[in-house]
Length: 440
Image (cartoon, rainbow, N blue to C red; front, side, top):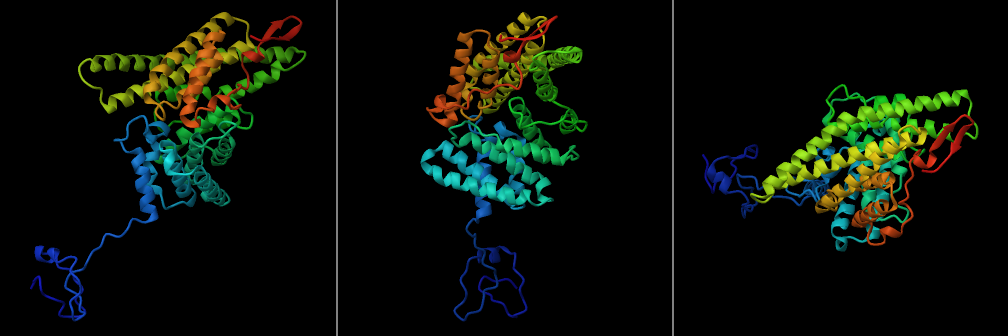
């Protein structure tokens, strides 16, 4: 019998009634005689630290957050899988908490003291070191994710010397230890895509991040899934860092022998082939961008553009600008190793620099976070500009973009003069007498 006033008639009866009357009795206090009522009182406990972290993180990646501040739309789809993995790896938990804290302070500087954020960052580094000392945890995708999150944190933490590359070097070591990707897990696949791209672009500017040709091939092996146009362009780019290092070595010779002449000819051929292989991807990202611009213009005449349309527009601006930047980087190698067609190569890079400048101005509507990748494209545009006025305009916009993350003093820091491993500054003139160093 079920009754609102009934009590347990046996100490062994621990069943919970499920009738409407029993459900209505939830929350009733114990009876005066000390016996428990026939229903179980259910209380909603306070959210623990884990739940609070999950909620805070989800608030930063949910679709209702616009493209200007949505972390997943900027840093990668792997972020969507992090909440389900929190609580399984101390390095990931600490890095996620730090990532949320640094982003919250960036969004609202009044809510957290810089010292507190830096202290939390230091604790996250300690947790990461602990996991890296464990041979099993060191190879876990969650630990790798912690590395990438801490790299992302650097964008929101002011450093007078610009972005530090220590985590990129550490990530490179972990990628080397992991070897060839062998997983179909979407979290790990998306994570590796984001991390490899960061390491790859770092390798164009730093000798401290380097891989053999075989390691680059293994790292970007993609037999399990089809690459997007921008993905194919990035895959082509994996050949550039070592080509630049080989070119630098040849161009630094005071004299040149027959073997060096041969190596220079090989480099000229490989640089041109790389540019040719990039062309289909560049055409694809350009066509895609022009298509969305056309549809967006038509849509805006009728009614307000949706958040999704804004996301697509921002994404295609970013991917097209990255495609142009990659070509400029490749052209720097072509300019360095060959006198053939140099004027046309210089002109192409300058044209692409102007186009990146236009794209970056258009992308200002998605600042700060949504358009943050434009800083890399603007760096390429500054390198590719053929005249001082264009280079100055690009640099001013690049520094303006960087004030989104580093404040109004960003233009005074010394970490902005990035230099490619090999570029037009290392250019040579081939002559019967050898290689004559030049500056172009």
